[in-house]
Image (cartoon, rainbow, N blue to C red; front, top):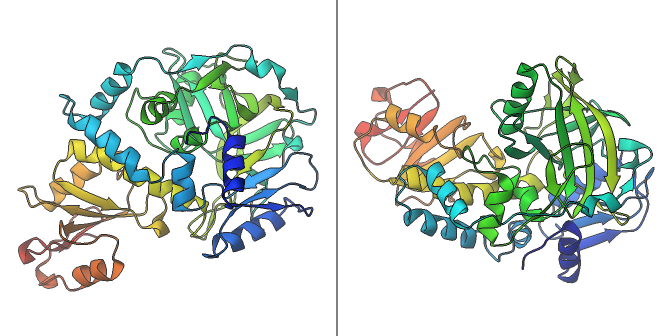
Length: 433
């Protein structure tokens, strides 16, 4: 079942018993996050939470909507993520293009333009008189630098081509008309910001809360160059996404968003952002971040504010990362046919460690490492463990047994990078530190 907006997905969660409605008033300062953290850690009672009465706002709050493997699959309109992963792999296998990015772009273009533009839709939305202060933004951890928007889909455009990017970046609320944004190095949004500021021009930005759950998930993907998130989701699900033009810029956003925030980022306008309680169990350090001057905040009359609480796993984001792994594996295998499977342990979230099973071939460990790190899936992995194709990557005890019992460690080659090669051949067992 495909969900064209967040509230349709919430209704589905409610109907299937996967949602808990909290009618008592809760405080967005620490209290909500504490409740969410406890629920995420409970295997028997891990449900999505809809807080209907949040102190200081009239807008209800949904959290942990993606907080299980099954709920994430449901959000993407399938019973199992492998359904979409297999579709992508089969389509890529039919392509004559050897490079996955070009092959994926061809697949999307062959489907035609699945995006539809509804120019007038957002004009009926209500203006938030107190700007960001109308929203139930959470302060999740005691030492956080402030309140953070954690599940906003950030839309930006290239100043020349007008190609859009949609990414998930954390935003720290400073006041009702000011926020700070943390772009990841090399991200699509960060590249757009550099391009606008290189010309000495302020960059328009739109932050969307809600819309199709598939797009919320896809905003966390690292897609090949030229592939937009909206086009990829339209191809993958077979459903078009209705888009609408923002009120203050030409940026196109989901026409059925719950809330839209528009702003501008001027060159050299930065301020200290952080600390932020991260999934590592540590706070990120305070560092300069671009300032967003908010132009307008507008919403559906019945808007629901979606968010997530970031913290030590298991939390909601590990299941989003799990879906990323299965989908992006198809692209990796198209480029490197000797990759059998990949497992990114949930404790590492998106980019800490990867366990990879491969077929035997002629490359050295160094060459394998370089090839794997060229992929969108593994480029930021701090640790890569190589195993034979017969190893169950999800059986941690077997993985540990193979790694720790690798023969002849005194003869192991020490290389630059971080990869453990624990395949059967003792000549090829290596630990890289």
